[in-house]
Amino acid sequence: MGNSDFGNLPKLKDFPAVRFSIRRNRCYPFPVNPIFSRLVLFSTVLWVGGGVFLTAIVGPTVFSKGLSEVITRQQAGAVAQAILARYFVLQGVLAAIVFLGSFRARDWGWKRPAVALPLSAMLLALVLGSGLMLQPRMREWNEIRYSPTRTPSEQEEARVRFGRWHGIAQVGNLLILTGAILIGCQQAWRLGRGGPAPQ
Image (cartoon, rainbow, N blue to C red):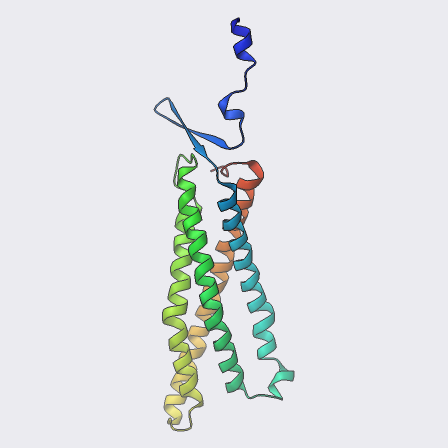
């Protein structure tokens, strides 16, 4: 068998399930787990879809003019807060899955830490901060501003704080959706290319 016969043999890098990281002139093969990658991508898509549905459909519908003829604005606020409480649980689970998936991407031959790793960590922190800290405070301020036992000054103060933090929450929600879309695009690129996205 001549040297030309060995040249026709398939090389390890030709297999789609193997990627390489060149470090100090050595090659390290890393198997790509397509099932886990698709789980992360599915979680990201569900996360983005749920956020868009909540922001573009649920919120405007609950506070719509037609629904205001059936329930009061206070009751509409209570309904929205109940929906947000359930959505926070789903969002937290999906954010944790995406974070774990981004951390796993460090083992797939990336020369630098994956962009998705610090981004998903920041998004997970925003989700936890919104659900565990911001939502309870906003629920409290919403109860105060409609409570008949509170003084007008207390109601006005609660209304101002609620409005201010509601705007901050909307900005945070936009940042979370934008970050989740970026991570989803990165995961889709990786699956389409059969390996990690370019850095």
